[in-house]
Structures are given as structure tokens and as C-alpha cells.
Amino acid sequence: MVKDWSIRKRRPVRRKAIAPLLKELERVLGIDLNVDGAFLEQAEYGPWDLVFVDKTPKAVRIANPEDEAIAALTLRGLIDHPEAKRWVSVDHGAISFLMNGADCMVAGVSDADPEVKEGDLVWVRDETHHRPLALGWAMMDGGLMPSATSGKAVKTVHWVGDELWDME
Image 1 (cartoon, rainbow, N blue to C red):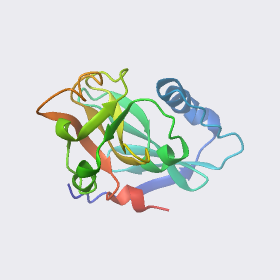
Image 2 (image 1 turned 60 degrees about the horizontal axis):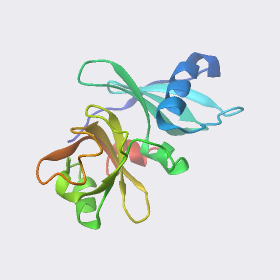
Image 3 (image 1 turned 135 degrees about the vertical axis):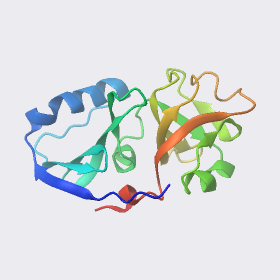
Image 4 (image 1 turned 90 degrees about the vertical axis):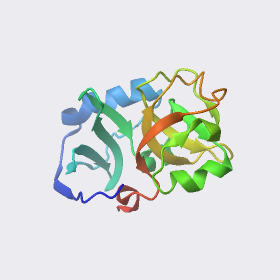
């Protein structure tokens, strides 16, 4: 999946302007972002809205298949918050496929957050080090993923090899 997107309209924002997005992330992922005193910016990246915290892309607003805005941490944001909910763990064999942007198949899933519901925006991590590998839409409930025998578990939208990962 090659994207010809670029960052546009990058501008500083006040915390109160993006407070609803940050509060939603904290609620859904069960984390504390603690961005008090940080330099906050907002930008467009294709159809996504990015939030930069101290010049690093930490959060993104993505439209789901029903065209509703969903907030998530970027992979860089997940590095700072490995305790975030809505995760899917994959074995070592799946990592090379995910790094090239492939969807996550159930054969590679070793574990998943049981709270994940079909259609949720989830993050995929490796089972050993819990490092983020990709973001995507759950194609089935988290409780079913480890025991499923065939099909897609997660439809990938953002992965380690993606251009957004390499931004500074």
C-alpha cells in the first residue's frame, strides 16, 4: 500500500482544542497521556488528522469504514504507552509480513485483548517484546482470534514500514 500523502497544514494548537481527542484516547486505551506543558501541533496527513506532541506524531484520527472519526495512538505513541488496551499479539513468523503492510492473519495471532470487538481500531504487537508493529481494524472479536483457524484477524492501515513511522 503506497501512499502519496504528505503532511499539510501543520500548526500549533491549544490543549483545549484537542482535549476531546486526548480524553477519548485515555478512556478507550486505559492510559494517561500526560501532555501538560507539551508543545502540541495538529496537521493533515492524507485523510487523517495527526497530533504532534513535542514534534513527534503521537495520535491520529482515522475514519472507520462507517465514516466515523476514531482516535488512536500512532506507533510512536504506542512505544511510550505499551500498557495500552486493544492489542493483538503476533508470533515471530508474522512480523516480516506485517512490516511490509500485510493484513494480520489469524494463523499468526498468539494472543489478543479479550475486550477487542469486531470493528475496533487495534494495535498489533510482537508477542516477545510487546513492541508495536501495526494499527488496523479488528475483523473479529479478540477472544476468538487466538483460537481461530483461518481468515483475517486485523485489516492493517498503518505499519512499521509506513512513511508516518519514519517522520520526525
